[in-house]
Amino acid sequence: MTTPTWVRLAELGASVLFILALKGLSSPKSARRGNLLGAAGATVATAVAFFYGQEFFGGPIRHLPLILIATLIGSVIGWIAARRVQMTQMPQMVALFNGVGGGAAAVVSTIEFLSAGSDESIAALTATVFTVVVGSVSFAGSILTFMKLQELMTSRPVVIPLGRYITSLAGVATIGAAAMLIISPSQGLLYVLLLLSLLMGVLLVLPVGGADVPIVISLLNAFTGLSVAASGYVLGNVLLIVAGTLVGASGTLLTRMMAQAMGRPLTNTLFGAFTAKATAATGPSEERPVKSASPEDVAIMLAYARKVIIVPGYGLAVAQAQNTIRELVELLGAKGIEVDYAIHPVAGRMPGHMNVLLAEANVPYDQLKEMDEINPEFPATDVALVVGANDVVNPAARDDKTAPIYGMPILNVDQAQQVVFLKRSMRPGFAGIENEVLYDPKTSLLFGDAKESLTKVVSALKGL
Amino acid sequence: MDAISILTIFVLSIFVGIEVVSKVSAVLHTPLMSGANAIHGVVLVGAILVTGKADDGIQLWLGLTAIVLAAINMVGGFVVTDRMLEMFKPKPKAKEEVSS
Image (cartoon, rainbow over all chains, first blue to last red; front, side, top):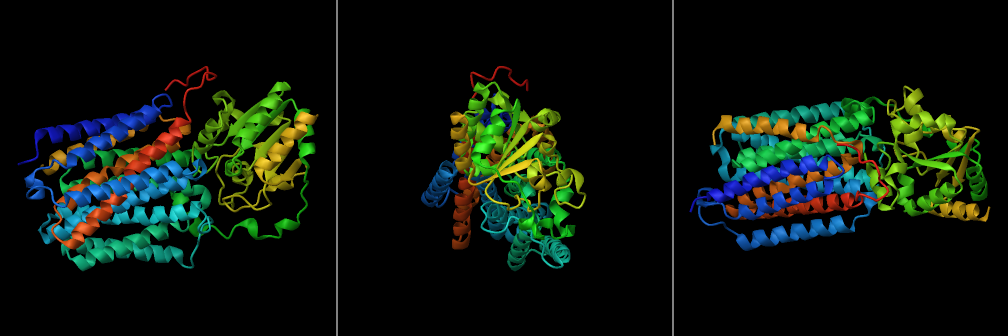
């Protein structure tokens, strides 16, 4: 029996659903429905794969029970992981999901190569090689990204001695092996290429600094899309070509938009650390005087302000203090104080991450102000309350050309009349650089876990 | 399918992919990335197809590995995206809808 027409039509339907999904995900109103449409498309596509005919399988589909079991195992793992993950850890989860997808694409092309061997056309061989290289780079890079975000390893840029040369050398070797594989295909060479590509993935992500990691996730996401498209070409499967290309193209554009939101050219993100010197956090920073404040001081400062801007950061999310901050804002609002949240585009660990986290705590949308909207208001602000954020308010990004984050747009809290930082310690932020605002005479610091500190401020405020 | 048809599909898909996300607001960057990430989990189809015609042990086990990985990508991706978007439920307080 050949593959029935309805299977092809169902795949066309799935492709359309994927397009509608991306379209839906671009607008807040339709985003959730868009995601569900995508899931529906993927379900349809998976279900009809079992009905391919003998011109593909050379008979009825083999190993059916094992395939079903493997699908079930993967689905359950994915489901549980996605359900259990804390919202704060979501970026690394996305990185991990992306990595395994890239790995799957590389393995699919490897299998097709093993079964077809040297019978493949040059074009198919090229696509195979592309999938193996890009899929493996995406896999290794994403795993490393996951480890950086999960803090299983340092989130600082890792600069290995002569790194630039090693990466160039590995790059040349990868391209060389890829070219040889296309000219004279052999299994041994394929495994060499796999290993080289995994190494490339590691080398490319190692020097990327913590703050740039989201852009890299997005880029690797686009890579995986392209490798899926290429694996579709190897298999002669139009659905995979369409879905992979859609993700590759939209992912590339999205990566550019994210980089723009952070004011970082893409090349700078990827190769910046190769040239950056060891950053400034090495100095005897602990000994410089800072002004610390008690929760009562902070409460009084806030109570007598007319305008307060809250700058939430990742520390707020880690401490699960979203609800406490909302309570504080409601209290201040009841006193007739004007309060807004200033949301940096990359507050949290990813673009839009903070919006998600605050929405989870039922903070009303209209209090969330985006950076361009709120920045002119800082000079007229009595107190800027920075909760668990650091890099996004670091004026080094504006003033210090040697800083690794130079060029990233920031929230100008240093222009407010008074600045209050709630911080766990003097440790520098994710990007690992010193923040001059902390030492400014108009800045007060309240050390401690963000949630505990906020709770104390709230109760002090109630007692006033 | 001939090379030109495939190339046509490829090129048109690029344009569609760029066009559909060109107007996304910064708030949705993360969910959009996550949703796109889930869509490329459809490589599961490829994994099922190659495993369904595997003719030796190595191909079979590699194929089953690919299936597990791809299914994690696909199911996990859609579920985690849905969890993110759950938070974006329209609230009674939100007066002005941002025109998209």
